Image 1 (tube, rainbow, N blue to C red):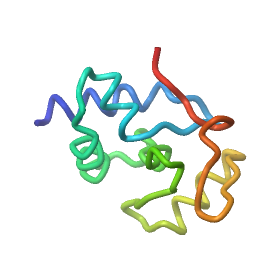
Image 2: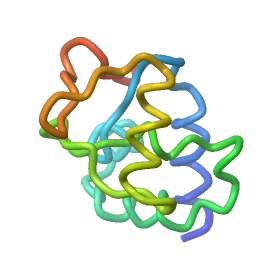
Image 3: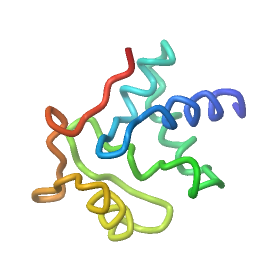
Amino acid sequence: MEKFNDRCYELLKKVPEGKVTTYKEIARALHSKAYRAVGNAMNKNKDLKNIHCYKVVKSDGNVGGYAKGVKKKIQLLKKERIKIKNGKIDLMKFGWKFR
């Protein structure tokens, strides 16, 4: 499982500032449907400073959870100028897809 988590983290590092990605998009980029496992990997992230798991949101744009709390997640997203309206992010504007 560790390798899967590491592959998730490596992908996440590619998401540029001001963009977010989804659990499902990371799973898709890994040729998997295991988006819940991606969420589990983000939950187990011990390097919050370098692996910005706050940039992973739900497929419907909902902010979702975060190890340090949803308020902290929203604060970090806003710091990157990502707009949140009614608890959701416009993925057409702020979403990132892996090629």
